[in-house]
Length: 447
Image (tube, rainbow, N blue to C red; front, side, top):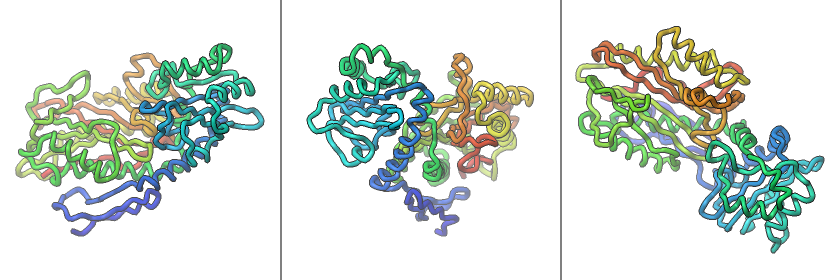
């Protein structure tokens, strides 16, 4: 089988090849793989060095004198792999301490149960046999930090991950005077995790390419035989494809099916996920929500396919107009409303005002991407607006899952309302959000 195109991804060491597979009209066969664990480790440690280089300025902006991250055996803190080398940590309690040492700069100390060369490259270590409690007390007494920031009090799991027992252990080790200066590290954690590095860009783009490739294959005749293939079959294929590509995922792949004459399938304002037993039929509009996890980074991706009826060569015009409405929503949010430094609430309001003016029924629920799939940072989201959350400022270079939908009456389906949902990773520039790969301009077609 002749390969339509070959992508070379040298930064990841990815392999791209053509495989013998059934002919597909719209999908190029691509086998994209992330680097082996040893290569991935080296890449992520290079990013860690850059992150540590930015940390002192961040701590000072947030008034943090000391930041302490505690990792417990069999209960890893989600921050550990971002503040220390991403290794298995098997000590009973491993502690990573960052101290603003004034003119001496950032002091980094690791109190771990086992010494490793990787940790020693990034942190000082106390002499063998010294108790972690003693070292912590000495650091506090010497530098007298004005605040001690801990993973507590935040609204997200990664900002409130300190356990009760570890809190008590820190309070006892540092003493009542220091305990009175314990503060939430949530603002610092958000800036630290929402700041993307230049070196992450190309590898992340490659992960988006991989995500697109797997979804195109899943929504094609390679996987789907109309009248036979079930939603569960496609989901299981995606799980197996993740394994073959040496990546994982941070959420269950979901499929949604819309068809002419179907009863209202909306739940809590969203189209409900289809049961695994649902058989994909001709004339169905099929939606996939899927993402990959590798290199400590996460993608999030939603695309739609139309299953051609006998005699059809394309989707009905009404469905294509529905997709065009969703593209108009993307353009309003990404190109006109969003700029670095703008409030996420203002972006949401401006986007929805444009949709109202155009008569498009729209919903926006976009969220940051990166260190987590639902990452920290500025969400452009109707739920955040309804909760009256403090608006976040859009940060240049941040990654966003541009997640949204429109609902449109489709004449060919008797005026039935059809939801067209899209989700694409994008990065923020001075001109607005830019996709990592081109958006979906037409439905994938299943023959």
